[in-house]
Length: 338
Image (cartoon, rainbow, N blue to C red):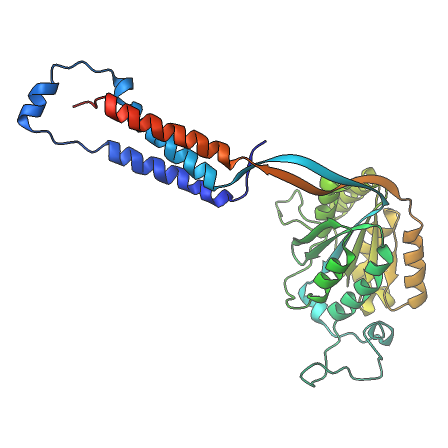
């Protein structure tokens, strides 16, 4: 299948065709004696249009050539034993709240010491700050696994598809925190007309698209402060079980420590899917949760690592040259309609 490396240049095609059409609509002026000479000559409509057809073909082929057409020549694939993970990070407005739990603060640094920023001012330890620290601990334990990254508030935003490049994901994680806002949407879309995609459905859909491993895990890093409608809870649970997907929650905020009623819906969905909630401030629970995830079965997948392409623009240039020659010949031999 032909692909174009400079796809935007294909926009020149309708432009040149429009210009050729407008030029062909212009009436040529003839002197009186010229009209008398040509009015008795027979002409065929198609033949009279040959020059403009050849000119159009020449210009279109030239546009296609500069758009750099290529065809895939070979693909390099890598076979690996892996598991597939989607990390969904809560960036809703509530994630900008301060953390009171000293155990969760300890993920960022000494909870008894005020953290200072580059400007020398005290750094605000928020739920998102702790979430980033928890992700920084989780990603390095996933050597050999594939991980994708989603951010969400009242809808999901794909940050990176499934990849084995852990350093890239750590870099993406380090840039979190530039923005928080909006509400929290765990269950969208729903049958009531709410169309925004939530992180769970977005992760399930991404697994359907690119997931190959037998073991699939959604790791949601959130304060969990949102409800899930009962009917939507069952729909999501059915999809998780059908896809052999487990939902683990890295719980950030005091609500997970106190087992707040606000976090119960997400907790229930996690447990029912075969996963669990891991409060990030509980070092022992964090280690145990990571060990449990590490025990999940790996499976063999094929990952495309590179594709080589062969340039074929010269074929379009040759065809354009032929059309240019045809235009010259037809313009010289075929008369236009008067």
